[in-house]
Length: 172
Image (cartoon, rainbow, N blue to C red; front, side, top):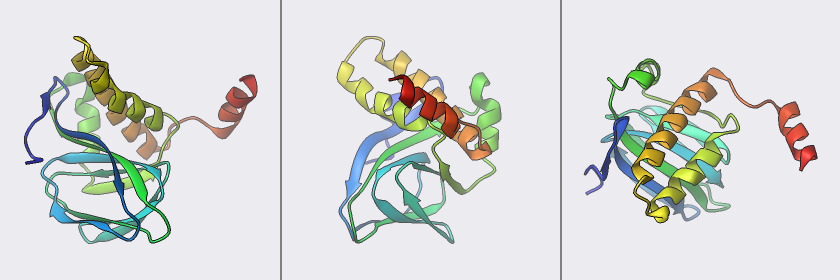
């Protein structure tokens, strides 16, 4: 049962942190969201149905959907769709993120492009359970705070600009 809480943190109850793949031309059947969910597209393209809306989600894009909204994901026919899925129930009284939870609450669902940080944060979040450290809960909490904050920033259009990225590339 995916709706069970797997990890209870100060920022949210975590239901799912997974890296998944949908084979080309197949789908995650329509379902009603039992929690809020942030999806980060790693590779491939999918058609995402959220409520009455449809969007195309490609590598480097983020999709946020709120609890209670119907939802379906269909991988395009040309390649598999790989993505990170973070299902959580926010603790709306978590002081540091109260304003961001209120901001995200305005949307049933929304998609935008990664602002340059979410891919890295989702990779670190996915890897943390394998560390098996006594302080993993602290790190997962920190990553969740950052991912939720960076999602809100990306929705506002705040992030790394290309000139900075190219400068960083040249410094390597």
